[in-house]
Length: 360
Image 1 (spheres, rainbow, N blue to C red):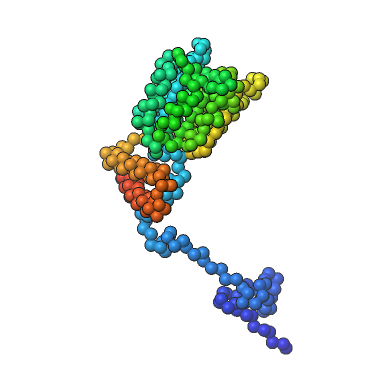
Image 2: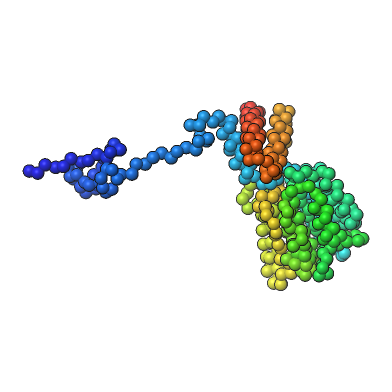
């Protein structure tokens, strides 16, 4: 009787494979990979040198690293202040003036809910003169910081003569070049202009760029009919219809997408040719928060109020540092960022503990 060859064991000392289905236990099977020397050895993935328990990182620093990721993903308005200016122009006819005034009121209510009364300025009707608009926008220069965000909403009629765009105001109108000069003087590096007036598309080429996003109700200066965009933009911010991801905030991109669809649907339902085609130009609309559906809850104890102020101050410093990143040496930037994040992680931990103790 012929002796059976012994089953070879792999050199890496892994257990022998079970017999394949249908084979007798006494029958040796050749390993499907050939000889043991060719069997691949699975290795555990090497951990990143500075992340994880093996590196000995403290819980505090791990929290800071998580906060880094979170801060990079937050909308631009996460802790920098958002300043709103809303201008409602001249209606010309009672039905238009009534509609413009209503839209301005809705937008102002949303703005105040989102960023607070002190950072919302409104001009409407007979008060929205050229001189008043120039004075108001000029005053924003001393209030708004470079790390803040700024939004201007124009409601009303516009005009375009083939060369110059103007917003219709009581008395002399203000033209596009004059508005652009005023906007350029406002320090905020991130700006959003929502021009809902007729003929607003005439500003697309000049106003967008250099950190400024522009939304217009029309695609050119030659769409001169009274627009519906402001009505749907106001609704998008007011009732949460535009909050696609249901996170309690509405970005400029969400509001634009919603209002644009509503405008198109309104013409389709009426069976008429669309006389306005909203446009968006510039980067960052998906991160620019234009409305919050609920006001942020106030701290419920003096301790939480103090911690919240510390957190706000640290987040402002981080936002400012991120804005200055290009002017700082990489090592210095990372060292300063890490220090701020560790402090922020400490404060957040204290907030979590204080809130937990308060609930108990």
